Image 1 (cartoon, protein in one colour):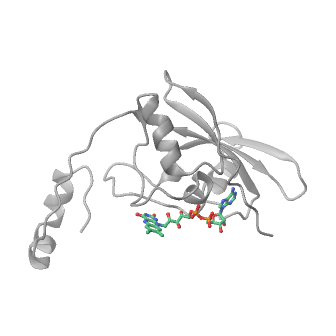
Image 2 (cartoon, rainbow, N blue to C red):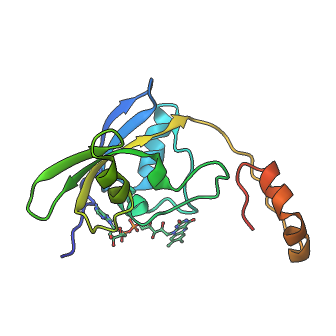
Length: 154
Ligand SMILES: Cc1cc2nc3c(=O)[nH]c(=O)nc-3n(C[C@H](O)[C@H](O)[C@H](O)COP(=O)(O)OP(=O)(O)OC[C@H]3O[C@@H](n4cnc5c(N)ncnc54)[C@H](O)[C@@H]3O)c2cc1C
């Protein structure tokens, strides 16, 4: 069965005190980022592109280059799932943590994710330093490069 959640694209709740945001699963990441920026908030980390849906990105284990942050799914603190029989389940780290852990990167196997609550953080700026470097030098210095930079990719 092919489902199109593109019209489930609303931000449902924003809590600026706890830095938690609940969105519908079909919201696209660049729209999420714009909505967060308007609230002075931002995702901890994300991948190279921002065209995926929130549900697609978390369900497939999309990750960024953050040294100290996990994949996008680790920023998920709550999920709403519709199961094959049509029942609606809500899951979080406190409520059925085992199902929650699997459902965060579920590849659609557990049901259809319809809403996601994300732990975000106050907006921040990153300075990018991009340059050509010889492969031998990168390999020699890789541990130091990772230690010196919050995000590193080669
Ligand atoms: C140019 C490019 C750059 C990329 N860069 C990175 C990167 O830097 N890091 C990285 O990790 N990945 C990267 N990716 C991979 C990208 O993040 C994945 O394609 C993305 O996670 C899938 O999201 P989608 O919305 O496009 O997929 P979809 O096709 O919508 O979903 C993919 C799968 O997720 C599941 N799913 C989707 N929606 C739901 C739902 N509502 N409920 C339950 N299951 C669902 C299904 O199993 C579906 O088959 C890149 C991809 C491209 C094309």
